Image (cartoon, rainbow, N blue to C red; front, side, top):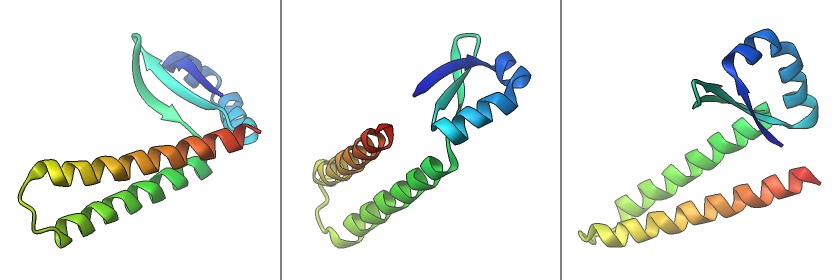
Length: 99
């Protein structure tokens, strides 16, 4: 579950929030003056996101290296497909982790 918390609440209740993140897989958006400043997420989620990011950039690099097409719209379409795939995987993982 994703919750919004103020920076003050984070300072006052860090241990409790960390337990909710670790044991309940909660996510916290840290707010300051109604502006999102940071997110606290479980380490497994962070590592998965970093892996997905690395894979996406790897695909983008392959697209750039392998394409002779100079039209940026073609490259943009390939990138959009990669992004859609990563988002779908993230959504599926998130739905799976809720059950």
